[in-house]
Image (cartoon, rainbow, N blue to C red; front, side, top):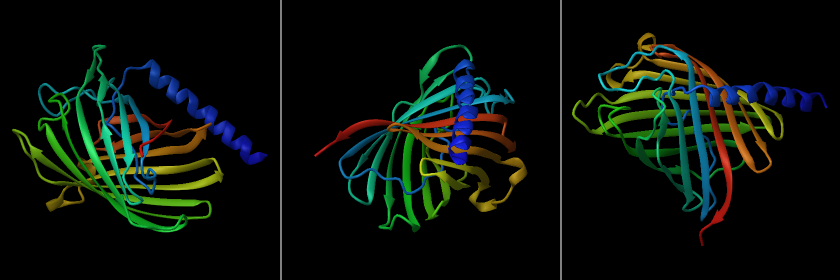
Length: 265
């Protein structure tokens, strides 16, 4: 009974966060703020996750002329997924949509991914990888074509979950180019009830691969996050603080799993 009340209280606390997100046109860093774990669609299963994030406070500066400021830019990205087998899943972010401070909604890119997970049991260690390639508008990046290779590792035991992603980001094509960079993301969660997990998510840009470790000049962010569900709808809700070189000081994010109930034979 006490745990149920804790879960209900946490849900009530996080609900205003999403309400504020709808009230303020705001920004976000990437199109998704998420630590990849061992979720994978069953073969033929079609999934849809809505990635929503919003920067409530931060610096309005930009990295280059013509870029959209992160401050007061709201972003919503539907991610469609298809299970290919017990180990592989395809994904498509279409479109990457933003609501800019001028009130204009823009579709600013598309990305595709393929995710692989090694066979594993429900509890214990798991690992895999995700490859993502996409094109975005000049407002979001000087180089339109970019890619990311993500290493996935994690562990589940009882009420605890631990996950880590090692991300290598690279430019495929563009006028400016740039070095290959590295980011290390992590998540630790504790399952308060079978349907409610509370945890910490950390996102840490490490800089160019050749000179990893410049924390003070690279983007860092830490989130208090909750994983729960309402009926068949899955929810990952978080509120976080950016620091280091991150212009976004107060960030709200949500990942909403939409129950499509579609299977391709």
